[in-house]
Length: 267
Image 1 (tube, rainbow, N blue to C red):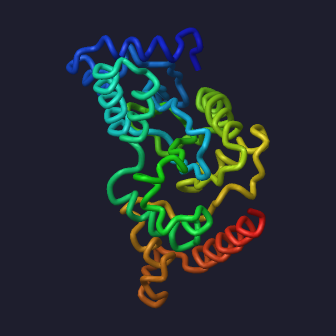
Image 2: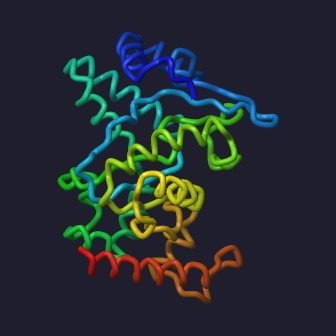
C-alpha cells in the first residue's frame, strides 16, 4: 500500500474539493486512490475515505469487511460538510465515521442478535440500540480493511481472500492490528466468516486474546433473514428451507452463550 501520501494529504484534498469533484471521486477514485494492483484477471484498488477515528474508550468493536462505495460516499460528504463548518479535523473524522457506520436494516438485525446473546447486559445496557445514540462512547465501528476496497470496480466482498492478496494483507496488518492494539480490553464482533478470519489473524499480532472475538453471529444483512430468524428463535426448525443449516447455527448460538458467560465471570 502506498505510504508516500499521508492521511493529512487526503484530508486536505477532500476539504479543497467542490461537491461535484467529490462525487466524481466517489464514483471513480483518482486523487483519493491510495494504491492498486492486479490480482489474476481483476484490478484490486484501495481508496481513501475518512475512517481513521478510533474510539480508544470503546468496550465493543463491531467489525465489517470494508466500507462499500455508498459508505465511502457518506463518510466523505459528512467529513467535507463538518470540516467546512467547524474547521476541526478531529471532530469531522469522528462525525464521518459515526454517520456512515452500519445503518438501515443491518443495524436492526445486529441489535437484535447482540441483545439475544447477552452483549447488552455484559455492557450494562438495556439494549445495544443505544450504542448508536447515547452510549456511542462505548462502541467502535470499523472494518477489517479500514479503507474502501474495490475489485474490478465493484465493492469487495471477501473474494479473493484478503490474506492471499499482498496489498490487502498489508492494509489489514497495518490498520486492523493498530486498532486492536488500542482496544486491548474490548470485545470484537465480526460480521461474517471473512472478518472472523481477519480478526483471528490480527489478534496475536496485536496481543489481543482470541477469546475476545465473538465469532459465529449470522451476518446481519437482510439477505440472511432466515438464518437470523432461526438464530433469534423466531422461526421454528421445521419451517426452515434447505439453505439454512440449523445444526451450525445451534452450535454458534451455544458457543456464543458460553463465551459471553465466561466474559461476564471474568469482568
